[in-house]
Image 1 (cartoon, helix red, strand yellow):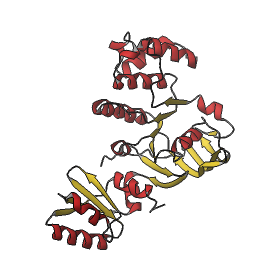
Image 2 (cartoon, rainbow, N blue to C red; image 1 turned 60 degrees about the vertical axis):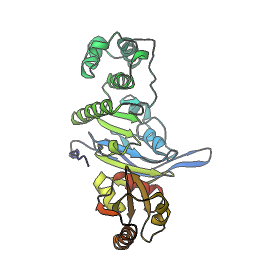
Image 3 (tube, rainbow, N blue to C red; image 1 turned 30 degrees about the horizontal axis):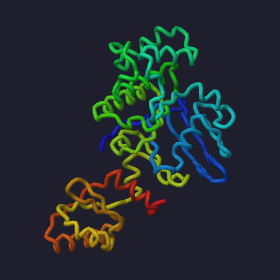
Image 4 (cartoon, rainbow, N blue to C red; image 1 turned 45 degrees about the vertical axis):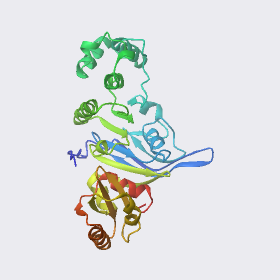
Length: 314
């Protein structure tokens, strides 16, 4: 698992976000229910959860993009319910879908973004963004001609022009190739080291591991929060990898005592449960019975979040 040094809070640097009991309903349905959260400045904070779980609504309330029905707290030292306009002015928001003008060049799109933000000395700021994101040599290329990775760089550059203190990324690397994803995350960590706080919604487990801390939300409630290692410890899964399980035996495996989930990982199955002794006995007997090989392995974040999604640890 990738480990990254976490920001250290100090009296002179209060948390970027500190909220309690945030609640939001739409058409009588409670989408977020009593969210408590603290995010240090310079942290990369990941939000995970199934579709419709309330994670995007939570992020938007934290950033001042949506007003909570109840609850209280601060974002960047400002009241999340009463000073949302001031908060929004300090937020950069990058959506999953590319929303810039495809019939404009990279540079023209950044000029447009600079005008929207009323940026003084815009040419200098734009030039800095082009250089930082590696876009300078492509400045005259139409945005519609760019690959997914280059569109991503343009979108990030536009988000950073007004020097936000908080960056919101909603599924930022969907449809982007692995190298572009790696380059993107390297830049996000560089920005965090400079003091930018990042909230990111993602479904990719390798990206979750790149975050300093994570929150897992389901049905509007925060089920788990902490570093990747802390979440794994809280869920408390024991996991075995079993090799070469015949298809006809998978149902038998799932029905064994102590087995709470069976997940394919390449040519092997990850078999997990919270009662380590019972699970070990069941897997051992199953392996001997079918003449298979197996060994204990570290549980992954994917194992943990599947367990959380199934409601066994909330």
